[in-house]
Length: 212
Image 1 (cartoon, helix red, strand yellow):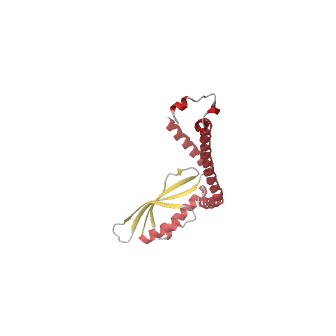
Image 2 (image 1 turned 90 degrees about the horizontal axis):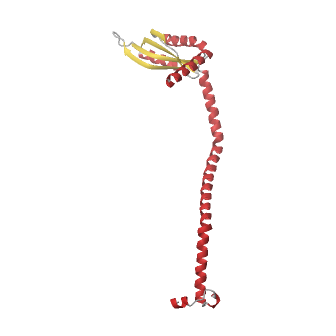
Image 3 (image 1 turned 135 degrees about the horizontal axis):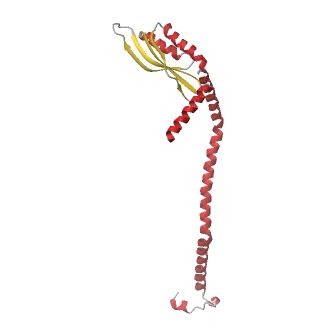
């Protein structure tokens, strides 16, 4: 194929072109059509297809997550029922306000029953929370190591929730067996209507102070 041959071609009379020129021209035209089609249409379709693929992948992942949640739902429901039962048991261990004096007597009797001597039994200021109150009691008791250990064990075995904190045990002067234990015993009870009002009022006052 020579340049002179190309110059002699008549564009208006393609039928007179030699076969090689016709084939070459057809290839060029087809390539231009394919390129134009890709650039104007197919490229956008490929972009749309890729977006649809990504969306499908996101939907598939979302489906798998929801499917797993649905399969685990009976397990979660069972766990929730267990938690509710446990919470109900714990709530039953919280006495109401009228039972606190009896609980204090139980604590005192637990110590006396172990042969302890109370030097101090001082109820402190009650601390209010969302639905319950904490009544701290500062105690000082004298006794042997085993008596004190059994006393703390008896407190843990009470049917109501009682905790012991701020323990401080020191030997008594002049004796090799007796110890002096200082501790804070915490008892708990439900909040009645008046206490709930105090809690709400305290919360509102704190909010006003923080805004001020």
